[in-house]
Image (cartoon, helix red, strand yellow):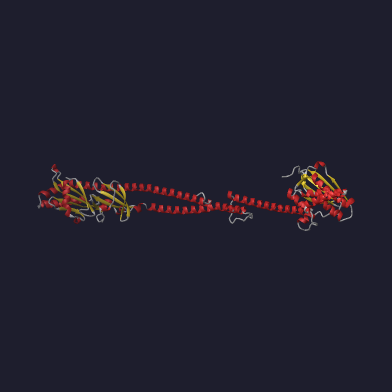
Length: 575
C-alpha cells in the first residue's frame, strides 16, 4: 500500500468508501425489510385472527338456532308423539307438522342450507336443499357422539358432506325435565357461506387460502389433496413460513376454543412482499448504478489530481537530466494547489533555464576574454627572465637608459604573470607608468601623458590590466597613425548614487566612432589588431559587475577620443 501510486490509493479509498456506504445502505434495507416483514406478519396474523373469530361467531349463532329448535315446545311435542306412538296416524300427522315447523326455523340464517332431525325411530325429517347429499353411513356414529354430549352441540365437518359443516345436537325432552332423548338435530351450513359470507369476501388482498383442521383431518376445503403432514407448521407459534410445492407461504394458525378446530390461513409470500421485492430490486439497481458512478467519478477525480502530479514529476525528471525545455500540458491546468504548483514550477524552470544560459554565455565570454589576454602575454615567464638578463647586462656596460627600459618592461611582465583578478588602483597606475616609460623612449616629445588621480583613490580595487590596453590603443591610433603630438590624460573620480568609480582616458588623436562597441556587438564591424581591445574589456567588466559597468566612447571637445570606464566603488576585493 505504501508503494502504490497516489491515483491508485485515491481510487482504493474512494472504492472502499463507496462499497462501505453501499454495504451500510444494503444492511439498512435488509433490516428495514426484516422489520417490515415482522410488521406485516403481525398485522396479517391479527387480521386473519379476527376473520377466524368472525367465523366462530357465526357458529355460535347457528348453535343458538339449534338450541331454539331443540327447545321449541311444538318440536318437543311432535317428537314425543313420533317416539311414543310409532306407525300411527298421530305419528304421521306429527311428522308433517314437525316439517312445517322446521320451515320456519330455516329462515333464521341465510347460510343454513338444511335442517334435519333424525327421530328415535331413525326416521329423517328435513327441510332445505341438498339433503340427499348427506353421508348417512357416518350418521349413527355422529348421533352417538351427540348423545354423549347430553344436549350440548358438537360441530362436524367433512364427514357428512365435503362442502358443509354440521351443528349436531341431541334433542332431550324438556317438559317434566326427564331429559329423555327424542332425536338428533342436524343443522347444515354451506362451508363457503359460513366462512366468507359472499364471493366478494372470498377474494382477499393477499389471495390467501383457508384450511380447517379437525384433529388430524383437513375438513376444509373438502377437495384438497394435501395432508396435514404436508404442512410443516410450527405449532408453538401462531405463524410460520412454510414451503409447499416449492412455493413459500405465510401460515397463520389459530385453534378456536368453541369448535376445537384449527384454522390455517395460507398467504403466498410473494403476494405479501411483492411491492417490497420490487422496491428491493429497484434499490439494488440504484445501488449498483450509484456504485458504478462513484467508482467512475472516483477514477476521474483521482486522475484529475494525479495527472498534473505525474506531469510535474516527469518535468522534474527532465530537469534532473538537464532538459529545461517546457512542454505545454495536453490537459487543462486547474487553478487548484496542484495547478499552481505546476505553474510555479514552469516559471521556475524558465528562470533557471534563462539564468543557466546567461551564466553559460558569460562564462564563455569570460573564457574568451582570458584567452585574448593570454594571447597578448606571449609566454610572459620567458620574456620576464630574458629581460632580467638584459637589464643586468646593460647595467654592467653602463647603459642606464637601456636598463631603465628593460626594468620597466620586466615589471610589466611581472604584472602579466600575476594571476590576480583585482589589483589596487595604485598598482594599476604603476604598471601603466612602466608602459608609458617604455613608449616615451620610442616617441620622445611626440607622447605626453598625464595621470590626474587623487592619491585618496589609490587604495580602491579595480580589475587588473584595464588601463594599459586603452592607453596602448590611444598611442597606436593617435601617434603611429599620424605625425602630430598626442597628449593622453588619465583621470579618476567617484560618483554618488550609486557609488561608482569612473576612469577616463582622453587623447588628442584623430578620434573614433562612438558606436564602435555597438557595431562590434552586432557584428557590423570587426576589431583591428590582435591585442586586448575595448570590446574585450567592456565584456569583461559586464561579466564581473553587470550591465551597469563597462566602457563608453565619447568624442573630445575639439578632436580626439574620451574612453570612460565605469565600475563599482570597491574598497575590498569582491568575493
